[in-house]
Image 1: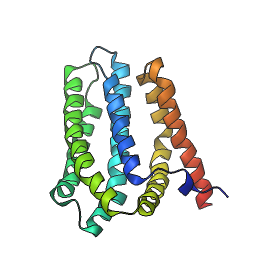
Image 2: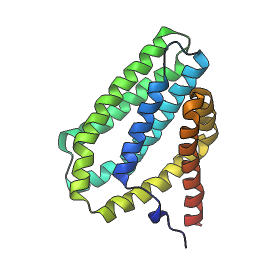
Image 3: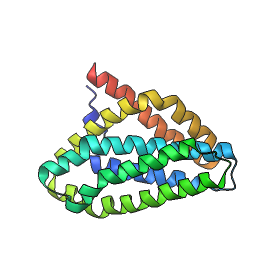
Length: 193
């Protein structure tokens, strides 16, 4: 019998993967690209961040709070997510042909970089030090299932943004990642049926 537990990464590995995905996408964003490509890349970043923040707020942060770890860094994490959501709303209402659009994407990524640095130097190492590998894996399975639920209504939009936003040199890599996420969705459906 197939088990999601056997293929799901740990929660901390999943969080790092999300960070890498957003950074990879941002590195594709260049102000001289067409408005269509910039919008697709920005949408990929925004969707990924929204899903990531929800997963952390629903699964990772409550676990850290229960253990009493994370302190100040954990305390500022959700307000930082809310600030990013506000910038995402401004990006979505801005014209991708304007210089303001580029400035908003840069502002969002400055916020993301600071947030990621805190998570990767404080929260993730604390979690890996204090949680067993079994618990990290179980949380990874929980995050995989919830990610599939959050991705389902956006799958078409995310696929379209990926195709438009990425050059042919990275489309295969991102396509494989999206395919893996969709596979996870199918596996999750099977596991819950």
